[in-house]
Image 1: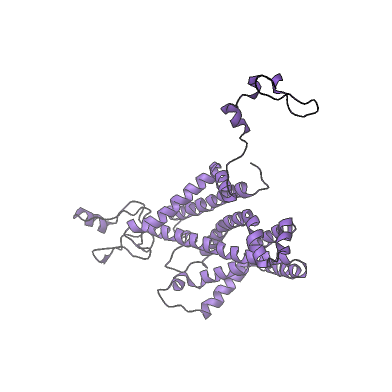
Image 2: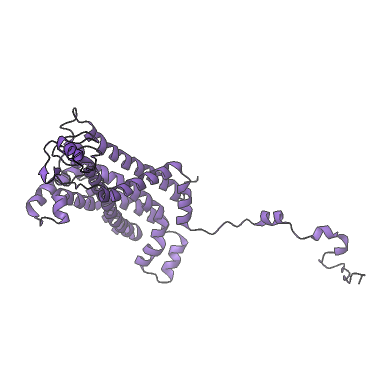
Length: 360
């Protein structure tokens, strides 16, 4: 041993001879060197990582903000505005016949006299319609109906398409062949013709009690929901089927089968979570499609039953006075454009954020 009590190195040993190295060679690592070695990223999940990428997309973020403003407005506005969507304006219990087709932020003669006598009257932000009803509150309720139809229809499409596509893709073979031929047959059916036929048939067969939500929606909207449930899910089913056909060949699916997992559990716990990006994207893009379909049907007169408004029915009723009162068409048209554009941009942002095949 030397003076430092360090044993001498055996010539045949792989031990380092510390006497040949300076003290600086074995100095503790600095903080900068430690940071360089820290290569592990923060623990995260698929959803958190996707949302972080989504908020980095300026168009998707602006779309979310705009949709949030629209949602808050349609929720809060009926609490502030004292008019109802079916209410014909009156002053002191007398019908105000002069409040027909008023311009935005204007009052009728009866309302002006009422205000001069010390009364208070909430302004007509978007004016009034041909039946002396406040147009702003009708646009608010029309936006509610259109968004409700869009979200409800997308949920119907999601549930049916996900179940059908999962079964078809997982079992494959003859089951997949038969189920896909059924999808091809459904693709060949004209959706608009089916909606018109169902509206005529259901109008004769179904009779709802007045005051219920079904009576307010009418048979036209119920037939629209039925058509969404019968026809519009096929695109979602094909997308999920294609994803499952590629996913079910992976090793972890074989491992799940080998330990006796049931097909339902494999689909629910192993396959569908890996299809989450396709499901989110397709659902987000289905909402504006459903809203546009409802607006188009209401525009041609087979949509929401009067007096309940929708954006399409409001645009349809505004055609008669288009030259004299163009703003009555502009307001619902702008709302439709903003909602559809925001949802489409949000769908594109969700695709960029959650699709693992796309690299930012």
